[in-house]
Image (cartoon, rainbow, N blue to C red; front, side):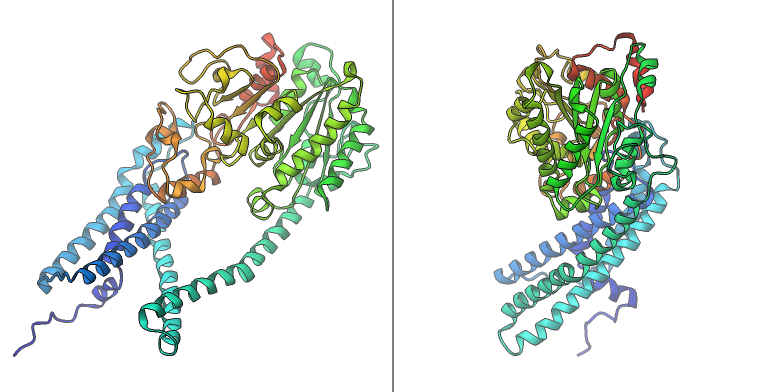
Length: 561
């Protein structure tokens, strides 16, 4: 009797047969979603990477669901048969359809990408954008699948060793999978992670030791690294050196405000072997510069290597006529992401230690002579400043106010305040107790009204402002994006980049993660860039200073965008 088996398929069909068809369907679906807009415009190669990672997640999910369905059908005794030729035809149609989607869908989304660019005031992508992103997506997806197959081969290797000598096949597969995962985890923990940290740490040390181009050690004795300071300019790190070298002097302040001004004090300490030692050095610098006689002190929590929002510090100095002392200290030599990974509590500890030492000295002074104490931070620095207080109430009890910008979602007090917001207000612009002490703002107009233009109540002292742009991915990123739709995507969000976004498992996480990498590549007022046009109004409200007709001049001097 002649065989009814289908003729041997060609090599391409053999290759495709090794892929999970359910996995490919989900990979294509996730790929489509990944090409929809998110918070910020991204380079073509990054868009391709996001699409590839999303496709891999879809493939793995589809593979798991396919195998679950197959196991369930086998358990129930269900059998599905199909004519071999029709099965091959159906497979070809599916493959052609998937290829058509991969090639054509990014082309159809170019207008969406241009709209996101328009929302943040940058030029939109060109015609070549979807072509480049598609090529990157396909190449990276294939590479990931090859790695996946390598791990599968490792699992099969362990399977042959275990199943023949110890247990039966079903249990052997579980044991082999566990051994494979354990091998990969140990390799990452013992080899990859230390190697990455060594490279990153070495590069960070080299960068930190290089002084900023075009800048010079301060000529003023009222700045760390200047004449009379025991701290050398080189010891402050690159970002600390920028901070003490930048900022206005008394003449610049007087020229802009048209009022007499003082030379501001700027103190900064580079990373040391202990946070306590750094804080002691900072207090000693405050002693040396006679900073305790100033009208106000600004305790700055920088990012791990010492980055400070210069526009915020300068706003503070201009608005108070230079009768100020600003102090901060670095707490790591690693970039923020690695610093947070290796020592997640250090930003809060550093902020708390420095603030407490300053507070202790101020509290020991006669009440009539005490300077007011304010706090600030941006990004990881905002997280550190936020985390240094046990509660929002302690924030108000221990300081005279502050401004935090781009505060990450995992900051404990910000998260608590957002949860406790007034009914009817949103996570994008939460209203806290009618704005009595603490206010959130995505733009200066929201310092006095919510996002629906409803006026807030009387603003009592002390005052705290959380600046957070709707388009700032640092503010909205969370690991929970992988599996849960966030509140900020379920709210009314007209006239923002969020308006075109929708949530999808895994995909939204990768989109917002990629947005973080480009969050400083947009103009001030968008993304993770908080410039003078926002900092000056925010600090004016917190300090209860009315710059009057000089506000625009101060903003221009600080840096509008």
